[in-house]
Amino acid sequence: YKDEKSCFINNLIDAGCSNDLINKCQMLKEQNKMDELIMTLTNHKKNLLAIMHTSTERIDCLDYLICKIRKEM
Image (tube, helix red, strand yellow):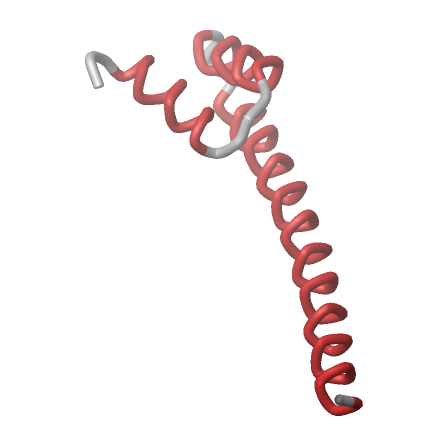
């Protein structure tokens, strides 16, 4: 990356942040509000984990269904 700002933005993009969240994080970083920036990123992480847990539960349900169908065959 050319500079730290580009690296920061690309990291946020890779983390699945929306444009609004990226803008908020940039603003917080520029204003040196690091505690709020960390809290914002932590909340995004919690949201991603919730999505992951929901997806895992759905996959488990599908695995159960597939297993049950195979046993009935």
